[in-house]
Amino acid sequence: MNNQPLLGDLRLFCLVVRNRSFVATATELGVSPAYVSKRIATLESSLKTKLLHRTTRRVAITDDGTIIYEWSQRILEDVDQMTEMVLKTRTTPRGLLRVCTSSGFGRNRVGPALSQLAKQYPSMEIQLELLDRPVDLIGEGFDLDIRVGTVMESNLIAKRIATNYRILTASPCYVARLGQPTSFADLANHQCIVIRERDQSSSVWRLTGPEGPVSMKVSGPLSTNNGELAHHWAIDGHGILLRSIWDVKASLDSGKLTRVLPNHSQEANVWAVYSSRLSSSAKVRVCVQFLEEWLNAHSGDIR
Image 1 (cartoon, rainbow, N blue to C red):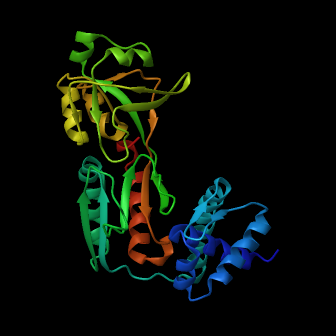
Image 2 (cartoon, helix red, strand yellow):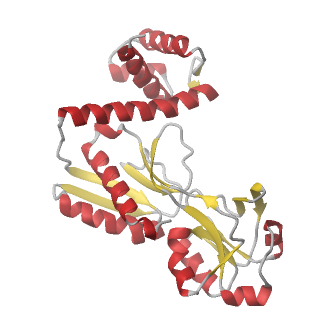
Image 3 (tube, rainbow, N blue to C red):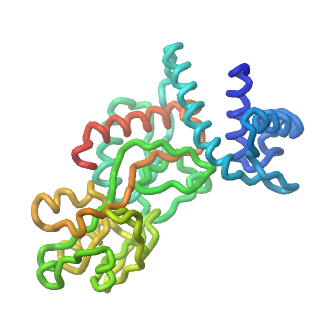
């Protein structure tokens, strides 16, 4: 099979998924909807699976289509980067780059990194907004979202740029007062500090322990949408906190917090989330690469 048509069809398929429409994709490419439909049919035939459910008004991705979409993004990104390296062509990033992230991670990690990036690329104008709520990346006009946790939107591109996980902690005074839980089920009898920040699902805690994935609805007298405030509440002895290791590591090292149920944790990697192809925007590409390198260089502060 000729690889070039397949790569072209993979690009077309990704565009249809992001647009959720054959017509919109055809308009963007300057071709007919019939052509788009034919190329998708060819791709489905090549892969021997149905990728999209078609109706008169919308296009929905199938389960197999979701897998192919995720792999397609990786394959196409690698091909684009390979071509760029061979040709040794780099476009100087310039103009406004709008970045958003959560307040704690923004102040302590993304902000310092972007400070260094700005020194390397003075032609770029970087605008960072710290938002402890879900963000409509396209609707709010952001170029890039640096997200800790999970990425649910299938119409966005997500690149993991650092590993991270959340753990359970509490202050020594809280443990002395109310005891150390010995099992995940014991959390039902403890005060828990609930954070409604970005992707975190309110009061339902989902972790992985020796017995596999576990979940529980927790409660406590204090809740907030700001992770830094919750961190301070935990130090003050108000309850058990589920928080990223990058955030609580210094408090653990100083003894202000102690780990609770150390065999339990929650995966919460750091992702760069954006709506356009990595290679289509020099400023987005350079920023993502820089953040990945910077965060890995400071991995002791994150893991």
